[in-house]
Image (cartoon, rainbow, N blue to C red):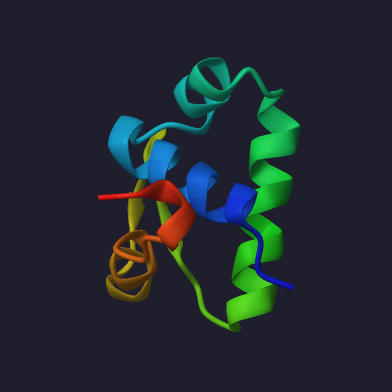
Length: 75
């Protein structure tokens, strides 16, 4: 099931281009961030991130999901 946490993790990873940096920002462990990304990919049935060297970038489908803004986030 999609969760707000999964989307927040995707947003942070996209901004930082790094699971480690996203984990620091969110005060999560690196494995927890990776788990949330994996669950989001499983729930959407789509590959959302691509590892590039030591960083991460969003796939085109990941970019679409990054744009999802639940009403609870405001603006």
